[in-house]
Length: 483
Image 1: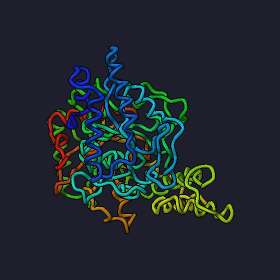
Image 2: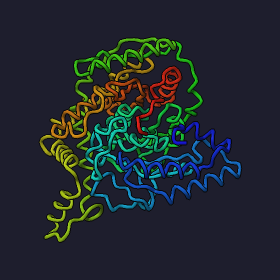
Image 3: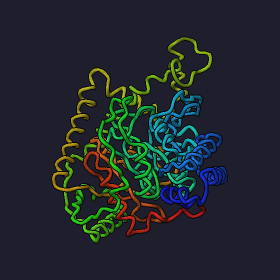
Image 4: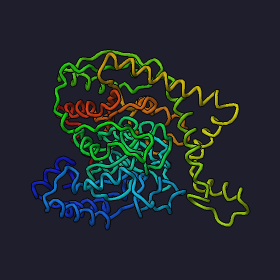
């Protein structure tokens, strides 16, 4: 049962081959048995899961149907879940139980999805390795000595290890696509505003976006269908009709124009990954796609711009966690200033403190124009590059990451080295574009991903290309040994 995809589970439930309750019990037992190796979950919700599974079975018995009705999933631990700990991977929120469900959680629950638990993550989604979590690092199921990527590493590791078929995740600078690449999954960051951020604890509000992590493009289409849509509670949500993402999966790729930016194949890219990307390009050419070299000249400025904008927004968003209104409170404070200092110093980990300080500096008087304003101008140039490119091509293809997953702890003493691993992913967040990573092969036994980017609200096109690619390759079917 644990090897089934979301699509296969939907068919099995519809054909009454098994019940949601049976499937849920199997996966909960599997998580209990195997997750101690991975540390991919922060909280397991057995009682809720069994309650939701029984309710889904009853709905099916009454004639209801739906791809997500009775399907087991997990939520990244920054989606608020009513009455359940929502920690953001931080000591600051270790004791926080949300009084309401995030829109994404509510929508998926209404569709009948079964919540098995909350997955581990980098603290407040700040990290590329899932090592900054207060609950400990998550291990990559392909090699337990390597990172699974971040910040959605818990969701990625759990799905890759076949503990469950799919999970929700979020992407601020690549936090869905990079873990997908590192763990041999398909991960989709939708257009900014496509999925509601209401109830999703913010890191950088103009960059954060929720999306699906699963083994196949078909499964991502099913999960995104349940997540997407306008939400009047979210002022950044866009009122745009949600298409049937599964309906276009079978479309032909004949004549599809794929742009390959020359800037992607620089000295920083592992040549073995470059070779796998070229192999993916050849495979898509066989399916009728037309390849064209393009240029994204301002890509080189994206990382410095991102690491000004994101920390600036984080310093503002995280100011609410002060030990008074929200979050961890220190013991026996001497006065109000001592309460603030020690509560935040004890509640936040080193990476979060680093980014808050960088952001506060960039926004301070005398530095706002020099840093934050300039970074926003670069953001506009990055977006303009993409708009120009999409006048010539339908999608853009390249590597998801410059290197495979690194060893646990290898970049802890050099945060900038970890930041540089986001070079291919952050541009989509700066521009608000949809992006997808899909499995493309292996380097030294570790998975590698290929990234696809599309114009706004063209998630269906990304899923279509990935699905057609997966019909003709088998990378996505491979399972880590021992799982």
